[in-house]
Length: 502
Ligand SMILES: *[C@@H]1O[C@H](CO)[C@@H](O)[C@H](O)[C@H]1NC(C)=O
Ligand SMILES: *[C@@H]1O[C@H](CO)[C@@H](O)[C@H](O)[C@H]1NC(C)=O
Ligand SMILES: *[C@@H]1O[C@H](CO)[C@@H](O)[C@H](O)[C@H]1NC(C)=O
Ligand SMILES: *[C@@H]1O[C@H](CO)[C@@H](O)[C@H](O)[C@H]1NC(C)=O
Image 1 (cartoon, rainbow, N blue to C red):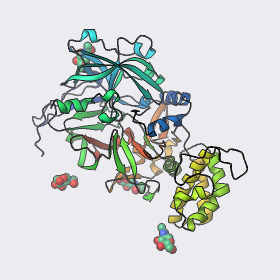
Image 2: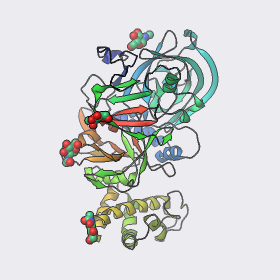
Image 3: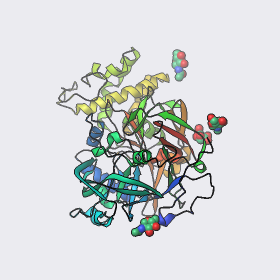
Image 4: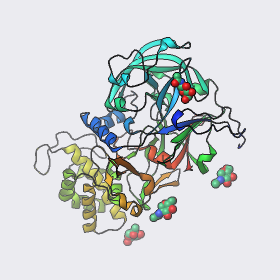
């Protein structure tokens, strides 16, 4: 196995941060794509927030994402994304800086036929008339993102990825990009690495074309993301194998549970070894190189924020639920009421164990039409928290006090929360359970440092992002996780492997 012969030599695509070619060993012939990294900056983050606030409601994108219709909705928030590289499109190759994104499946770049979008003026544009290998398609398409949409049409051409020429790849020439994120983004387009099931127009993702054209001796690609902000190399994407220089020990593999995103079943998140409950029986998770942070259910993120001292917004609904119903919830749980029935029994949710309902419930406290969806959600979170505390044999007073504190740690609707940079060394380890193994994130790994006018701001790498059933609850393991764990995307065996990054 160790002598696997991979055919491509190392290559260096990103001119500015080019390491020396890595073709030193004759056995080591992996196709390496050096990734460039853009430091996160706080202003950019704020713009991202603005962009998202301009959406009528940040949560709509969750609904969109969680919707059961089969429309592909690639993940959002490209603005914060740090890792990108260069590909060549056409013959002779026209260069484009793209995000390699495992959370979507299409390849798209701006078209020379894009006339009316500012975004197109600021980026490289593909000119089909300058390419000998261009084949027209012309079918129109549109992709909706959380903060905008791109539209364009399909074309076919050769794609140069490293030294590898992928023939006749179907891709999108965009003619309109209506999103702030795309305008400010430092990249021209996106190269999606998800499954074809979420590809718009059923265009095969680039890895599938590589597989069909037998360009790879091993049907995998792998990511190493360098979290060292001072290093010249941002990371490495390898097609056809994994670079042994960048991981320690063996990979732990989990099967892909649903082909679309790179999705698998994940277990509990532990804070200093203590269960956070919500995913104890398993939650879906996806690995997404196109998201910078790590996103998860609000009920868990609030507990993480509490444990690490992150500031959130005070949720009046949450506090109201605790003060009015806290004791009742506690008593019901002590009386062995099934947790998913508690909130309907106290009258805050219409049905058992679901977020989806309750428009127009008359509030029991006598107010007309309280934001009852919010109350229902707050109640369901309180149940999870109280259950956890009961398991630890805490007293009633302590439990209600703690749950009340958690209300204050509820993340803001935009998800990010700041922490004190001085207290990183006192923060707990957080551990994910994957394939019965524990994957630890230390505070140094999950706290993200940003520069804001010469000052360092620290934010929690965990953000709240709720996706309703049946597709949720869902974890999105973005760059914060992938930076700690070298990740193999094995499309030959439909599995995902994680090993400690090196
Ligand atoms: C495209 O990128 C490659 C690799 O970085 C470089 O050698 C080539 O000169 C670039 N081509 C153009 C037209 O900029
Ligand atoms: C990795 O796997 C190989 C073969 O399965 C085994 O021999 C080796 O001991 C493992 N290494 C570690 C560090 O677990
Ligand atoms: C809580 O108390 C029960 C019964 O008194 C005991 O069996 C259990 O181990 C205790 N749990 C913890 C976490 O202390
Ligand atoms: C946190 O995890 C790291 C790495 O696994 C370990 O070295 C360290 O001792 C842990 N710290 C605590 C407080 O458990």
